Image (cartoon, rainbow, N blue to C red):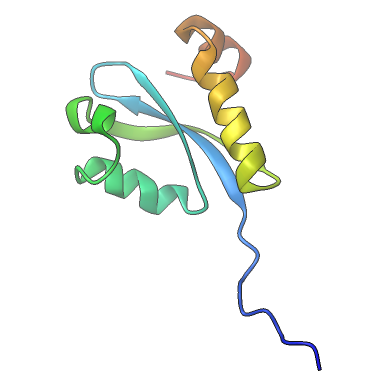
Length: 91
């Protein structure tokens, strides 16, 4: 008899946050709204503890955690102006 999987399929997303100082932070999550709150409350990465996030400015659905992490790395490698142009960020 086959055992049923209890794991839910989770969608992974890449997100970009605008920080109070105007900088951009890129990350991945399967719950970006909760992750944003974590960042705001000092429970995110070290960068967002010293650069307070103020809003999510970009979300992009990825097929898997692996593809989300690859896309995150790609976006992080871009200079700020390219991020704004390619992702069509309205800052």
